[in-house]
Length: 352
Image (cartoon, rainbow, N blue to C red; front, top):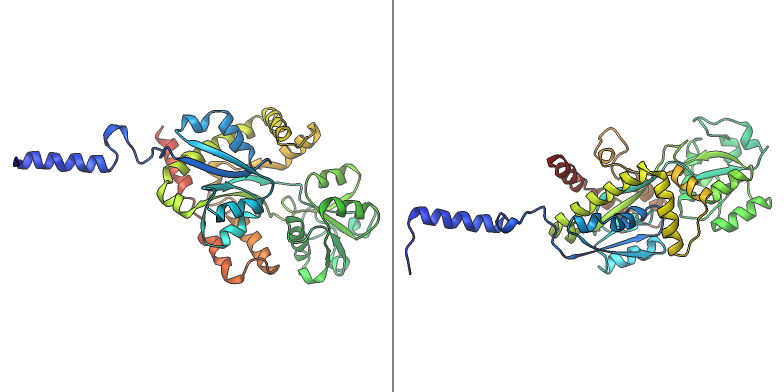
């Protein structure tokens, strides 16, 4: 066995350290692993940046192997995450159930609903004649107390109805939420049932076009903005951080593209939705583009902006009151928030 001199020994140590840190052969801790990244999402505005980032070649250029898996709703996404069939998800309001388990990390935010979550009254009703305590709000505590509000339970429409009542100093127990799916609730309200209708797009747009009176909008009037969550398996955040940072970089880049070019967004969204079996008219797309915008990287890192994860806290609290999330699980939601991957994206861009 040949004995090394001190200089040779130091060189050997330096080579070993360099190899282990990825300094050799062009390796870097910022380099994606090359493993398949399984991403669950839906064929809605929230999933469009995923689809377009893939179509634009952003994932490939970043060295990512992304498998996009489409689901009909958020519930099966939660199930697939629980079975570890997905590495991460770009989902909707239902994502809060997964976050409450403490198993996932909230790493980013996608689409933000600026308007379209609305409560409607009939033209000429008493609700339309009284201005509320906030701009754009109509009605008063006396009218709302005991009112029948049509809409599906445990949904954003139900959340809105409660937020609407609370704006007038009332609680969820002060009105009656008459549970109906959105299409049935709309038809029932048109036929004369109920006092108010709580609905979401496209039903809210249909009610507006039909001449019904909007007494509240969840975002525009109450300041409660629904934001699509991006969350990942805790093990993936720990072991494949570079993959997620690269994915977020591509996702936020594509969101910027979609915000900057509404006509492109309309075209690609309509094409994709049609491929997934949903025909969307030009007017429906115009409404979607007006009502749902995409978050920007700097917005998510702005301490003076909408708090990172705030939507999930609001929604989580709502589901606790509905008995759908155990009270003891609620702290897990905030514990899941981690915008450090977005900070990595920012640092990565600043180095370029």
